[in-house]
Image (tube, one colour):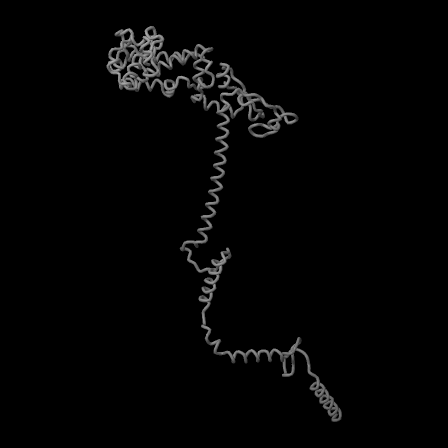
Length: 401
């Protein structure tokens, strides 16, 4: 047994010598000679020693750096970030400590203002474009009122509806023609509605109804009562071929003279306005008509209404002392009966001085009042007193004039 124990001890001593000669590798769980699995720490220890040495050499510099807490560091960072954004004019996110009750930054206000200005400019541009388009369409409508439309062909419209742009004609389907503008429309925009056309009334005295598109009919119905037509400019020859229109012109001329008397008489001026309203233009411009007026001319209703107004207010002028004082005495015959300019069938009015005379008395003679005004302007007052009405027509007076 002793020998066996001696042999075991010898073997253990030899094994310990082998372990001392070799440097084991593994996790440093015990012992001072064990190293890590990956590498040794000798180099790391040397680096840390060098760093500590540098810190010790510059300890005075590190001691001068002030110590700051977390809030102060965060505030400094936010200020620096804001300054950098303002200087570079970039829209980067800022980390700022701002209360909720504070107003927004100036940059945000400027951006909002720019956006509003840009949006307002876009909206105003759109509104102006729409206004110009509507003005152009309204102008085209008004110009078409006195022109008889002529068809131009479906190819001029590129085989599309004039209103909605839907394809019409050929393989696309049937269409309707508008007699107002001569355009071609689909069945949705043209339902064969009919309306009288002002152009055919003015040029042909034609009051028949013609098929028009839905939009054009709506437009025509809106302007039925608008006095847009001047017969003396559009077709003055219509007075010669339409006796009813000539009669209405005669009555409206009388009414215009009656108005000059009535408007200064407080007794009947309100009644006069009431009976003419809302067509005051009937006595202001004798050639101005609306579509409804022309229809009433054809039916005789307008002449009937005007006759009653002329008769009622001319009767007032004959009786009213104030209105009677504005009458005239014929300077040719010196008849004491007062005459008025609205008596168009028996009187004649001078276009220069507006004096009124009997038609049978004046004929082609010169106006006595105009002669007196001419002589007075030349300073011949004495000669003016010696001139009688009969002397005005002699050759000497004609030479003076």
